[in-house]
Amino acid sequence: MKRRKFTKKLLGLTGAGIITGLYTWQIEPFWLEFVKKDMPIFNLPDKLVGKTLMQISDIHIGNRMEDKYLIDSFQEAQKLNPDFVVYTGDFVSYKNEKQYKQLKSIFKHAVHGRKGTLGVLGNHDYGHGWKQTYVADNITYILQNAGVNILRNEQITLSGLNVIGIDDFWGTNYNPNAVMKNYDKTKANVALCHNPDVCDRNVWNGYQGWILSGHTHGGQCKPPFLPPPLLPVKNRRYTAGEIDLEDGRTLYINRALGNLIQVRFNVRPEITIFKLVKA
Image (cartoon, rainbow, N blue to C red; front, side):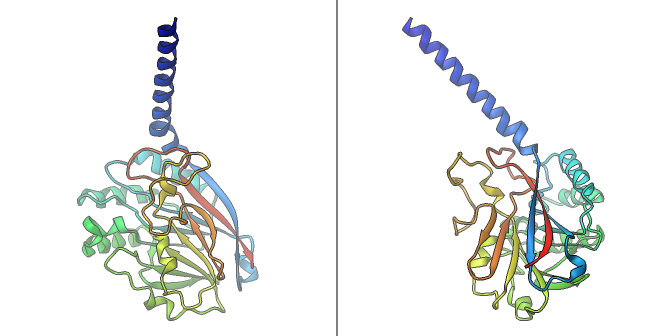
C-alpha cells in the first residue's frame, strides 16, 4: 500500500511537472498582454491630452523567435491605432547577416503611430559582444527605411511631444550627455533608454518625467510573490512595470514582446499603451 501511494504521488508530480513545462514553453511566451496606463506629463499641450503612446520592446527577431507570433502581435497592436509608437531596443538577436533579412520581413508589418514612430537601440542590436558598430548602423538603416526614426543620443519634437533617445548603455555609441546637455524642462518630455541601469548614472541634468526602458524581460521566470532570480541589471529594483525614482523621474520597464530563450513563467510578454494626461 505504501508503495502504491508513493507511485501515485510520483506520477502526480511528474504530470504536474510536464504540464508546467509545456505551459512555460508553449503557452506563456505567446500569451501577450496589452497593459494600459496613464502617463502624466509636465507641459503637455492641450491637443495631446488623451492621446496614446505605445511602447514595444525587446522583439528579438532571429532564429529563436516565431515570425508568425511577432507579426500577429503587431497586427493586434495596430488595431489600437496609437498616436505615437516607441520601440525601446533589442530589435534582433544578432547571430549573422540573416537577421537583416528577418528584420526587413517582420517590419513590413510594423506598428506605426499616427503622429510619429521612434525608437532606440538595445545591446543585442550591436552584434557580438555588443561591440559591432556596423551591425547597429545596418539595423538603424533598415529601421529608418521601415518608418522607425531611431534616436541615437538625439531628441525630436513631434506634435508637441519631445522624445529623448539615449543609445544603448553597453553599445559603442552610448553618449547620453550629447542629448541631455540640451534638456529643456519647459517641453513635454519623454525619454527612451533600453537599459534601466542608466537611471542610476549621473547623466540626467535635472530631467523630470518618464523614462521608458526594456532589457530585463521582467526576468522571464518569476516565482509567485518573489522577485525574479535572474536579471541583467545591477540595480535589482529594476524588474518590470512602473517605478517611482523619487526625484521627479518615473521609470517604466516593459516586460518584452520577445525572448532570447522560449520560456516564461508568471511574466507574460507585454505591449504597453499609455494615455497622455497633464501632470
